Every structure is written in C-alpha cells, then in structure tokens.
Image 1 (cartoon, helix red, strand yellow):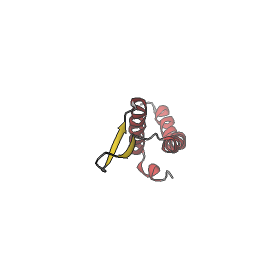
Image 2 (tube, one colour):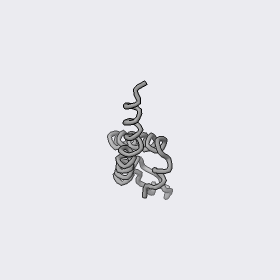
Image 3 (tube, one colour):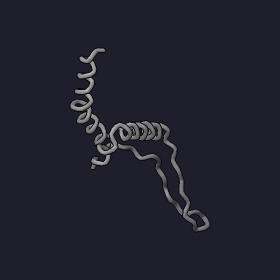
Image 4 (cartoon, one colour):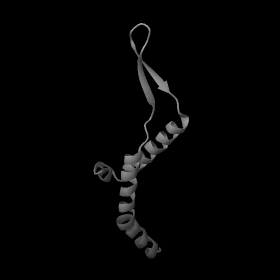
Length: 84
C-alpha cells in the first residue's frame, strides 16, 4: 500500500482544499444569478398577473450554480453554514 499518496491526499483534504472551497462558496453566493425575471402587471380585469420572461442562458447558469452549491454543501455542510 502506498502511504505517501494517502498522506498527501490527507494533507490536501485537510489543509489545502477547505480555504479554496470556502472562497468558491462565497464567490458563488455573491455572484448568484436570479432564477427568473417576473413582472407583476395588472390585466384588463384589474387582477395582478405574473409575466415570466424566459432567458435560457440565465436559467442555465442559475441551474449550474445551484447544483454546484448543492455539491459544495454535501462536501462540508458546516462550512456552508458559515457563508455570510
């Protein structure tokens, strides 16, 4: 068994990756795109109606960022709780 690889992996996981992943979490939360643009308008009957604007690029980016944040949360849930 190769203990050298195991020890370097342990060092990477405990010392190198956590600060990098914390920066990734904070950046992603700060730069998170809005999922959809919704405009509330009053129709001819005087009722409030939501109009949804489909921007497939923004929705795609949002879904990718959401999935990434889910993976980061699964890796280290307490670290995600510390994101301000």
